[in-house]
Image (cartoon, rainbow over all chains, first blue to last red; front, top):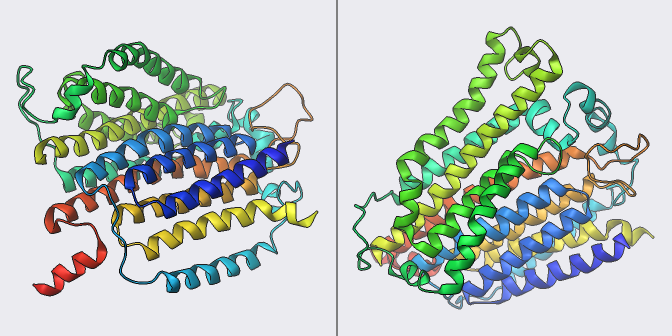
Length: 331
Length: 118
């Protein structure tokens, strides 16, 4: 059964990818890319990677599509036909693909339990992590504890990307005018007049935010964690901004607040590491945080997941604000 | 049944190459970013395919002591890569927006023509 789902999903992925390659209307291509992400999220569930599927569904179909659409609205909506023949690129791509397929001949078959990838450190993660770290969700244990350095680095990359984006686009702190629709992004204001959108958004936004908190604090026990929660919380705010206008959203969480939050999340993460050192352990060795190593691990993971969640949330909303405020200004 | 064993990898390579094709053959920069996104998603699929074990389940502890779990390590690597991926896509998009503002176009050959005419 799993094999059939696998083959069906892979076929759909191929069809969607071909459509993205072919279509010249960028709007359609971006929406198809959203479908592509959703299909790959289903694929991840089929391959037992529930945490990854969660992230892909939230990021790929939500935030990424919105950002691409905003970027498109600031540029062109249609791709021009290239002057040169694509034959040369087709040849290059075919050769590269053939080499890669040749390379897969040495790979162990899909799902083979004897593949070497399953016999090094993975066994320790699966067997020991419930005893050494605690959380039933092994992905959380590995992410936050065994590979805590990695995650710290990745959080820093996200913060840096946010800063680069603001440096490139600038963040206009326009004065909040008293409800004059002439200022800024007029298109957004029109959305507010749609009764269905307004009511549904009001019903959904609290649920989205609540769900994000659940994902954040339940990540030790089920799929979820700081990355997913941050993205979901951000999508709640972004939905609000889309329906009720950028200025209304900026009143709820303004750019200065987000800027501080983004830095605070990473500082919290690094601070936990330094606290571990101060208490006699290594950097990010949570065992030192409490008398019982398992309690220490629990506390450490809770804090750093919170740090990750806060940073990811703040950066995702900052990215949206940066594009949306640019749009209001240049239009 | 050797071909089923590698089917996943081959499809992933096909997807990767279609992303690659978009990046090198299209002049429109947003389209290039879409191609990069397809490419990165197929890399994610490749990693997760490797972590799968037949008869395994999601790596969340169950009561059954003989339960087989899929490998959690690729899941962790890819989970963070997805969020980093969207952050870098956004930076690329910001660059595209700035190029549009400066050149009035995001087509590669038109930009080159404008550069040459200076």
